[in-house]
Length: 79
Image 1 (cartoon, rainbow, N blue to C red):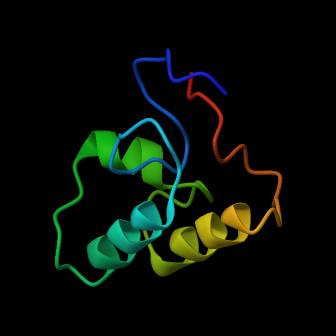
Image 2 (cartoon, rainbow, N blue to C red):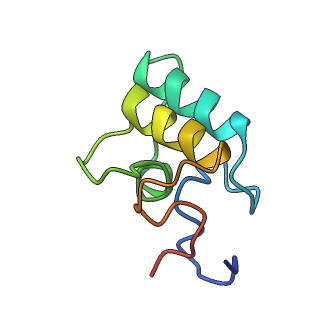
């Protein structure tokens, strides 16, 4: 997927143009209230579309990284 969309890539919460284990770590930190989640981070990080970035989103990213695609569009451009 291309990173050309201004909204970014689904699952790429840190907006480095790639979905990595770091994104899952950031999602866990947001869920634990160690990091603040901006609206842009919510758009990119809420992969299960429940209006929150949680450990479940991190798990979905981990599954994506293991090629266990949940059909959520992780790694694809948003918008």
